[in-house]
Amino acid sequence: MILSPAVLFEGGSGRTNFMSENTSASEWANARGEKWLAQLAGMEAMINPVNEPLIRALHLDAACRIVDIGCGGGGATLDILRQSPAGTVVHGVDISPALIEFARTRIQSDRGAIAFDMADMATAPLPNEPYDRLASRFGIMFFDDPRAAFGNLFRWLGPSGRFAFAVWGRLSENHWMAATREVVAEVMDLPSLDSEAPGPFRYCDPEKLIRLLASVGFSEIQVDDWRGALPIGGGLKADEAAAFALSAVSSLGELLAEAGGELVTHARQSLTERFSRNLRDGVVQMDACVHIFTGVRLE
Image 1 (cartoon, helix red, strand yellow):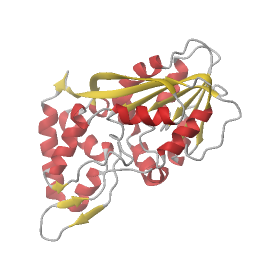
Image 2 (spheres, rainbow, N blue to C red; image 1 turned 180 degrees about the vertical axis):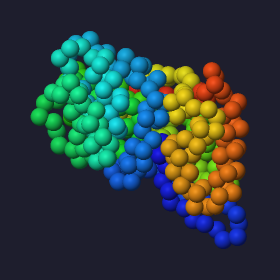
Image 3 (cartoon, rainbow, N blue to C red; image 1 turned 180 degrees about the horizontal axis):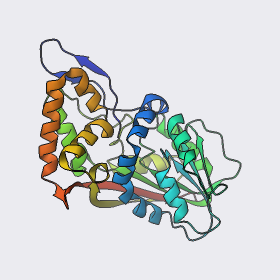
Image 4 (cartoon, rainbow, N blue to C red; image 1 turned 120 degrees about the vertical axis):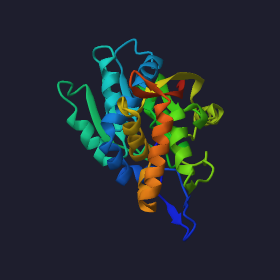
């Protein structure tokens, strides 16, 4: 969801070549995590509707050990614990120090039942005890080495354990991100999205992730789509939602700011106009599609 800020300005053209829209795990560990944290409240409120189908897919029918991969600021992790049977233990892991530090401040009366730690899933050591469930809300799309990371996650999961991972569907089915990219493309030259690199649409083709998960040992892999309207920024008017999208959903706002005030004004006005067509009850809500992958470790 957060895009890489590599740019090349072409003198005299009035446009910018946007060289990369992908964010690596190392970027998340540094500045990207801190910028995500700055917009965390609005982002969590926006994607909160995904929690319910994700948690339902975990089949939490008894107390168990759960790890939330790429937990960010811990919102989904806390929700998982709230909806789990008594005695459940939930751990959130993320590569960003800033996000883990913030997540730890949210632990209140649940100490012992919940914890947050830094981890790079490609290299993280095995836990002292296997987990019964693996969960991730948009956290698995940014692995630098996905085969190593998923292979490690397979080893983190105990026999008969289950996983549920949520990832974004195609750009065309996620109207809020499509609109944001389109208005920036009006003033910048954007390359085609690289589906092989870390990024929000890395697994928009379900077959790609199904093959990868099967190759490291997971079984009974299925994918179901959640479709619904997301409140942009958690429920904002059109102009506020446009500002949120340009600053929080990606680094496109930074690029526009570097390119000049007129481009910022054009992009924000254009996006405000697009968002104003999607007002419901006075706030911007736009259709989204999320793939939810499930499967088990049999052995």
